[in-house]
Length: 126
Image (cartoon, rainbow, N blue to C red; front, side, top):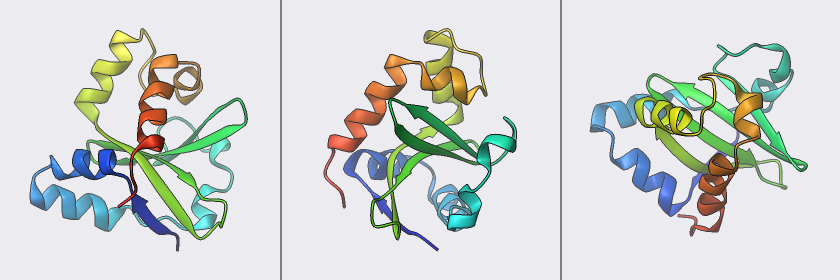
C-alpha cells in the first residue's frame, strides 16, 4: 500500500466535499502497486487510468463523482495527489477544452489540464 500525500491544493479541493463524501473517497482511495499494473489495457471506464506527456506519468482514480490525479514518488512508497476534481467541474473543464469525456489519451494532450497539474506540483505538500 502506498502512503498518500496531498498538497495544499488537493487538500483544499477534497475539503470542499461534504464530510461523509470525503470519508468515503478517502476510504476508497487505497492504492497498491499492483493496481497500477496494466492500466492501459483496462479501458476508459476503469477506476484507474494513466495519462502521460513528455515522459511524465500521472494516474487517474475515479471515486464516485470525484477524479483524483496523482503520481508515484521516486521512492515508490508514496503517491502525491496533485488534484481532486469533482466530476461536474471536470466535465465542465473537458467541455471548455473541447475534449471527449472519459478519454485519458486526449486529456494527456491538453495544455490546460497540465497547467492544473503543474499548479498542484508547485503547491506545498501537507
